[in-house]
Amino acid sequence: MTRLGYQIANFTYPDVPADQLFPTVVAQAQEAENSGFDTVFAMDHFYQLPMLGEPHDPMFECYTLLSALAQHTSAVRLSSLVTGNTYRNPTLLAKTVTALDIVSGGRGQLGIGAGWYELEHDSLGFEFGTFTDRFERLEEALQIIRGMLAGERPSLDGKRYQVSEALNVPAPLSRIPVMIGGAGEQKTLRMVAQYADESNLLCPPNHIPRKLDVLAEHCDRRGRERSEITVSIQTYVCMAPTHDEAVAEYEAYVERTPAAEVRRRMTIIGDPDEVAARYADMLAAGVDGFTVNAAANGHVPGRVSLLGETLAPLLG
Image 1 (cartoon, helix red, strand yellow):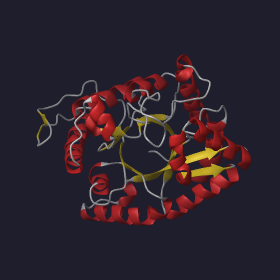
Image 2 (cartoon, rainbow, N blue to C red):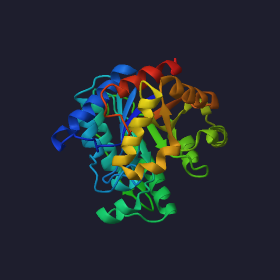
Image 3 (tube, rainbow, N blue to C red):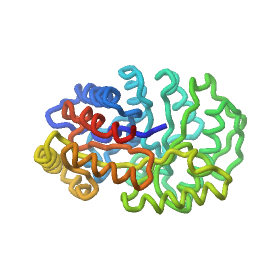
Image 4 (cartoon, rainbow, N blue to C red):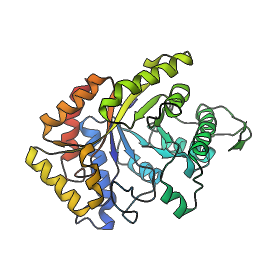
């Protein structure tokens, strides 16, 4: 299960030409693996997100990238953070995640959410629908995908999807954990309690205790132990050996990516001691671990290693 995950969310690197983008991504994944991260994540988007850049900025297709990273790593789990359910039929997604598990030697993981980026849907022709539509589709998809990943032959005559004894051969090499991303109290956390092994919260740190209480209530209603679910929180960080270096690297990031200015207040910026103290506070609030997005400077050699060496000891 994910206790310390590194999310690769940014592919716009200064002075890095297109033919060196993938080697730069590989270097981050390898630093993560060698410094204590247990999972490497890629975003499942086709356009860059508004708070990370512009739609025309580089973005890799998630599962192609993860399968390629499987050939350059040997221990970290590999997952999306998180797959937009709206982008793929659930049977295709089950087959895709299974293929990732097999080509990685049993390191596949499924992160999934309802989908939210309307521009991407409208531009590329994916059905967006209403908020309710997307969550109805997610719940039906989870029933299909979980069955296929477990070696069953699920059938569903649903409102959104219809499948009949869906096969998944070859089967995954391992039991593939399911992570649901988000923090909605009525729908998302209820689905976590019902279907997931992991929850990745998207919320301010001071909201952690309430979200955990709500999740526990959903678990109680379903006769499930809350302790069965690993809960991590999504975080944004820019760390460097010194405070001044971290600030300078974040300022350089905002200068080349003005859209990132709005994320400044959500980003932990500082030296290892400052960053460790902030993450220790989140652990004290009750989460089991973190996913870490270092969009500002993760491409700088050594920065991901420094993150892992700083954060892994906090988790024991």
